[in-house]
Length: 475
Image 1 (cartoon, helix red, strand yellow):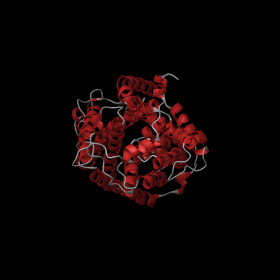
Image 2 (image 1 turned 120 degrees about the horizontal axis):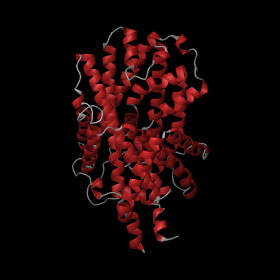
Image 3 (image 1 turned 135 degrees about the vertical axis):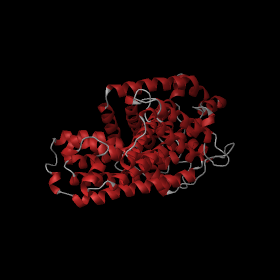
Image 4 (image 1 turned 45 degrees about the vertical axis):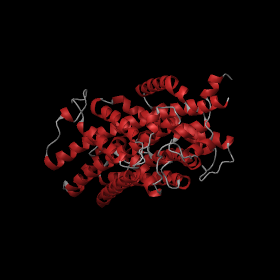
């Protein structure tokens, strides 16, 4: 094999990844300050946002009451990949997440493509969620004061406005929290996660008082096809369970806590989604769901005859979305930190501040780019590309588990994926299936982004790779 091709599939040995993570490099390093609770809250914070507030209203008309089972099917689908993530996170407990796992198992080129896809997934999803935050701020203002922000400052050009100021504000606030330190941001995220969990429990407590079993019949009005279509739709409400794997360098006990946080967060989210779906459909006939983000608020108003419960729900939505912005932006900066440490992106992304022990310049650069996206760019179909990026990364992690079991069976594993190799193979199959369900514009956006990424890799990353530099020096 020629040296160029060999370089593309060069793998960074697990032992070296772990040694680099533990080594005392020049300058300050990330600080280990997160326990199991913080890590679990990080994954919940990245997942539990607009999904349950919006997706239930969109999926219920497709499946009827069987949308409850659709959430369970989607959770099982996510579980296949979550188990693989748990094994890899316990075996390679570093901040690169699926990028680092691909680097150790498939090679540098695939690792780069995976990391590049994650940059699209994280960056665009932060911007899209930030836009949603502005919409909920307007909803809250309308409910409380019967006023709303003018479109000129609440929507980007092309969507009827000039600049989306609320979305830029929430991104700036998230940056401010993140540059303050990992401990402080983890505590705030945990507090916000607890609040939004309480708000959804509050919704269930009220909705169950109006529960009518007749609303569950017929349970499957559109048959199995309707239920599986809804499952494919709600699957994307689970994306984010992997966020804990981006905190490998800041976890106190990463080998033990990362697998636990990933599985625990997915379990909590699944139970909550199913309870909310059951309570909502029991309190309001499924035929009245119409795809509006106000479906849950409409239920509370209908049950109580008052507006204050919907105000609490709107506040919960604002908090939920803010925590998603914070958690996902944290994950993106840590993946960039790892890529910078490997030399595949400029070293500025790997510079850690000596006082706060976080990559401040990294955070500010990411925040500025995301704020511009959220404030001035109508995202449209590009937002759907976050789904395909996530599924691609999930598939690579499942492949990585299989490869690493074969090449390094001797490695200590804090958690092992059960029923190997059935689980990772099913994980790959479901990821590919869901990718194929996405429409042509999403694939086009993904192809363009991948092409740009390859150009960046061959223009910069290939020549500056620390792995390749060390190999050249050794030869």
